[in-house]
Length: 411
Image (tube, rainbow, N blue to C red; front, side):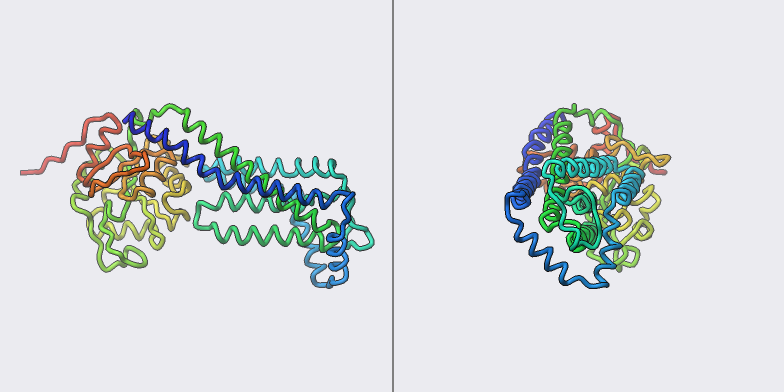
């Protein structure tokens, strides 16, 4: 077991570094973009582009667009974004997503402070008041409304990315930030380069914060002592397809499938495990909630052996996303508190979903590997079994307990 922990630690370093390459490249490009815009905004550079855009917009304003942007630009005010930020942080904290809550708090604190500092540094004047619809005080570069709204929008995309809501969130966030930026130079209170600089700076702030938090988490993970095997197992999450039940390829809710069939030895294994552990089914069932899964289990006589179901349809995220496992731990916890990851084990046949995803979330993982396949990436499960009948023995080894004996049969 210690050797497996060592292999996971050695493999975690290169994997975490590769994950940070793309954000690092985005950060570098966004900073280069800002420096280019800063040169265009410098007083010594003729403002031909900004002046032409300002004149074009002023000549093509309409009463309808002006009324819309007058109202819309108010959504980018400091008070409005602060209230929205506090509401999202409270929702994240309530769902035990403290890391994401801290991420949002950091970016929304850094963004306005950085914006104020840069305004004082560049001291760029706003467009002429004669061509503006609204009056605004202070310096222009970079746009505070554009930067803060884009920071908020990008942060929400990062938070929603592990869930199935990633694309709707990205679409809404892009629309919100784009319209906010357009409102600022349409109303004549900012130059075009002010808005563009606000957008690229927002990207830089969100990316830099993400990089720092990921680096700190990876360093803590590598330096933390691996003591998971000493923890007793309290809850066992069991995958559905080809782990507990045969994947018959049905469509729609499981309860209505023409055929459902348990894997060989499933009932005997669950009967033995039920004496010591709480059992929950953890499944990527996008069309079936907990009631549908339990109804399907009842058709093969297994519903009485499980304490609940964690379904991707109910959670809004799929394995191996960390949100799925956080929801599973919250479902397995008590009094509204999530179960400690070290007290839970995920059992399944999918290497990326049930092993890699579970271990990344802090759970131990038992890999159901009937074919005896080998991994070449240097990683290892906490235990490996060939059949579900071997699971009680494997779980006993993880928690240092005596194996659960098969129940005695009468007669």
